[in-house]
Amino acid sequence: MINDGKNENGVKIRFDGKGTEFGETHRLLPQSCCMFDIDKMIGSAFIELEITRQNIAYIEYKTNFYSENNKIEFKALFELKFKQSYSTNEAMKVKIGTATFAQIEMAKMLNCRYFFIIATEGKSPFTFYEWIDNEFINVGILSYQDNNKKEMINNFWKQIKLL
Image (cartoon, rainbow, N blue to C red; front, side, top):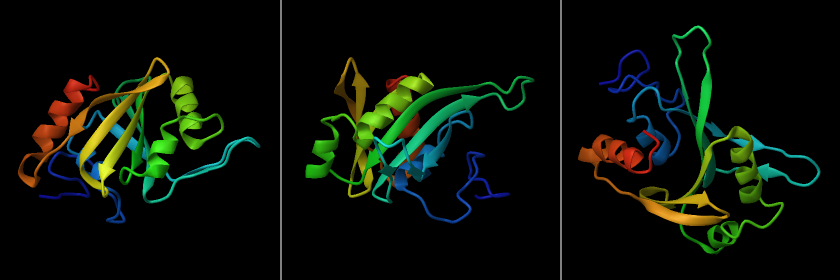
């Protein structure tokens, strides 16, 4: 049941009714798992990044909204790809100056983890690769049915140690 612009988990829903399945499923995590998407980034003269509907970056952070210092801890930067493709495979080569390279550098600056996620035509299952020691490591697959989304994403977040 949706109440006051929030889902049954007490998390704000998108005001425009749009977004990705991944973003919608992320809203089933605890309220402390906050996330925002990056629609467009422009770097210096070396790079220009524009993220489209099929390639979307998200940053997950945790904060204590009720503490006096309101400290934010960036947990992860996610690059979501619509599907496995030639361009997806090329992006995973992390060539200097590419969007993937820039996002990994951003994750380092934010002191957070970097995940490259490949969806299945934009939907579950989602294959997660984490950038560890200068290479992508397959850390698991988030797969669910409509009736167990919340349980499966919470279990997967625990498995990859984000929860």
